[in-house]
Image 1 (cartoon, rainbow, N blue to C red):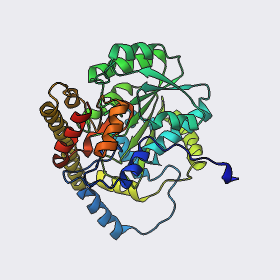
Image 2: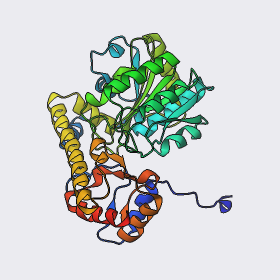
Image 3: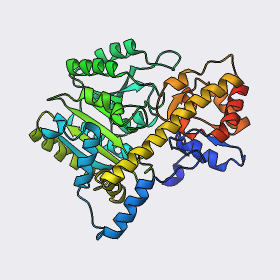
Image 4: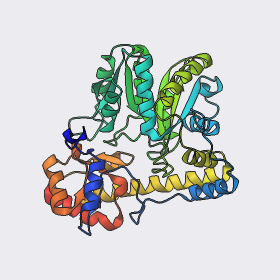
Amino acid sequence: MFETFEMAPPDSILGLTDAFKKDTNPNKINLSVGVYKDASGATPILRCVKEAERRMLEQEQSKGYLGIDGLPEFGRLACELLFTADHEALTSGRTVALQTPGGTGALRVAADFLKQNLPASSIWISKPTWANHPKIFEAADRKVETYQYVNASGTGLDFDAMLKSLNGIPAGDVVLLHGCCHNPTGVDPTPEQWLQIADVLHERKLLPLIDFAYQGFGQGIDEDAAGLRAIVRPGSEALICSSFSKNFGLYSERVGALTLVAGTSDVAQAALSHAKVSVRTNYSNPPQHGGAIVATVLGDTELRAMWEDELAEMRSRIHAMRTLFVATMKQKAPQHDFSFIADQCGMFSFSGLTPVQVDELKSKHAVYIVTAGGRINVAGMTEQNMDRLCTAIASVL
C-alpha cells in the first residue's frame, strides 16, 4: 500500500535545518529554526537546569506514569508564572492546567478540545503567524481564518486594521493571539493596545487562545505577560498554550502547558475533564522529566533566582544582537534602513527580504532563513558571524 505514496513536502522551517546539516560550507549560518544560541553559537543547558537534574537524580524513586494532566506541582507553578500567585484567576480556583509535550502539544490538545466542545467555532490567526499554526488546527478539522496584524512593510503593527478585523469576527469564534514576541515578526502590541484588544474580545464575546511560547524573552517575565493579564478579567474565559522550550532551554524535553480559565471553579473542573479526554486519546499522559525540572526550579528560591538571571542573560544577548545587526547593516548597506529590527523583540524578525533574495542567500552564501517574509532568528546571530551575515545580506539586496 505504501508504494503509492509520493514524498510529502518538507516542513518550511525544519526542512531548512535538514538542508543546513547537509551543507558542507564551513561558514554556513542557520537563522531559520527557533532555537537560542549563545555567544559561541551553541544551545546551552542552563545552570539551574543542571542543578535541578542533579537533585532529581538523587531523589527520584519511580518512573511510573503521571496522571493525564501531569505533575500537579508543575501545573500550579506554570499558572503562577503566567499570572502571579495572588491573581484573581488563580485565587478563585477558576484556572486549571495540564502538562503537555511542548507548546505544540498544548496547541493540538486545545484544537481537539475545541473540536469536541465548540464544533461550530472558527479559529482566527494573525496574518502572518507561525507556519505550523494553521496546520495544527486544520489537522483537528478546525476552520481557520485570518485577521490583519502587520503593516504593509511587515515591520510594525497595523493596530487600526487589527482592531477592525477583530470587530468583524462573529461572536463565539476563537482568536489566537501571540502573548509576546510575535512569531514570525517580532512585532507586539503595547500594554495600552493590549487593553483595547481585551475590550474588543470581551465586547464581541470571542474566546482568546493565547500562544505564550516566549515569556521572558521580550521585556521580562511580568512585562511579557501584560497582554495575557489584560485579557483575563474576572469571570472571563481563555485558553493559554505555554512553552518552556525557550525560556528554560528545554527544547528536547518537550515541556508545555495548556491552561484553561473559566468563569467559575466548577466550570473550570468540567472543562478540565473534557481536556483530559483529548489528552487520553492523543498521548495518554505527559513525560515526567522536563516537567519535573521546571517544577524543581520554580519551586526553589535559589534555583528560581538563578533561572531569572540566566533568562535575563539570554534576553540581553538577543537585544544586543539586534542592535549590532542594525549597526552592521548600516555600514554594509547604508542605503537600506534596518532600524526596525532593533524596535522588535523576541527571537524573530521579518527582514523584508524577498523569496529570490532568501534563495540567493542560501545558494551562494550558505545563509539559511525562512522564505516567508525573510524571517530571521536573531538568537542565532553571534559577534563572530555578524560581519559575514551582513555582508551576504548586503550582496543580495
